[in-house]
Amino acid sequence: MNSKLFMCALPIVLVGCQAELNQVATPEQTGHASQGVYLVEFAAADRFRQQADLLQHQVAQYCATSSDIAAVQEQWHQTMVSWMALQGQERGPQAALEQSWNIQFWPDKKNTTGRKMGALVRQNKSDWQAGDIATQSVTVQGVGAIEWLLYDTLSNFQVSDNTCQLGVAISQNLAHNAQKIADAWQTNPWVTLEANDWNSEYIAMLSNQLDYSMKKLSRPLAKVGKPRPYFAESWRSQTSMVNLKDNVIAMKAVYQANGDGLDAQLRQRGKGALADRIVDQFELTIETWPTDQSLFELLQTKQGYQTVMSQYNKLERLNYLIHEEVAIELGVVIGFNATDGD
Image (cartoon, rainbow, N blue to C red; front, side, top):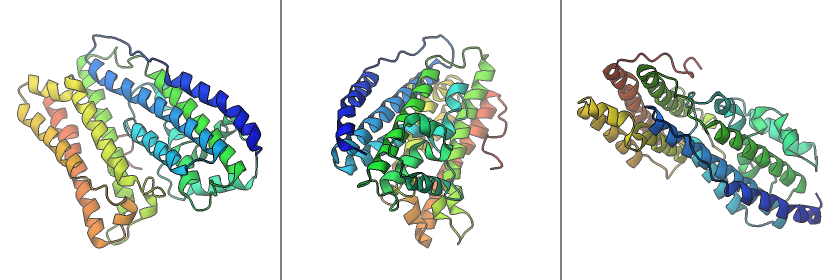
């Protein structure tokens, strides 16, 4: 790609990015029982939008100036952190849920992202646009595709102008889809639900997200003695365990909903002991979660495998408390999780 042309185009990209970041999003105000949770989700969606915009900016700046790739990697990680708050919930505005696979293709059991991205790079195309990416497979549209560019030894992202333009287009498409998610959360999707239906939806959302997080461990754990580390999320960047910790932090925020969530509801019903057990389990899980090694690294040794199993058991305990005990106390029936049977 002509670097002078790219530099000329960069100010337009940066101005557009700054305009997006300066947008002030306002949540819908309702008196519905779901309002506390809705506000948490609204903030999470808007945060993801902002981080995706920043990532788009960082990729464009890197490709225009050959600046330090570490800044792009760090912003990619921050974008992943913000995505963890929305990942795997299966509840909320349909327009937001429809973007899930576009944002992240996982599990990638056959390295489809690697094969598809390698094929795109080999096209040696220098005029990639976001619209081109939007018509491609979901495997090359989201955070996993950008991770491949930043971390895979085959990407050659640091020196190839054509690959850089591909990265710019993917990051622009990602930011566009993140905006769709933020737009979808401009209104509360639960305001028509009666109290019992809302409780069922609320518990199901937490259960879905917990189940998804548990599968991020169980799939790589596979059979004892035969782990599948390449099934781990973000194995290229070695950030899988960090991602999972952020999942748990986000789920705790949804559970508490700034004092207007399940925790408060249980205490109002005289179930403070159960509420304490759930909060304690969240805090224990977060405080003892290992992040010094990635899931990929941990699965290379027997001791590491046991460490991962211990974390899985902590999530399983949380899932039992919420999916079983809370549901019983509130008198709601929770169906199968969306990921059951995967």
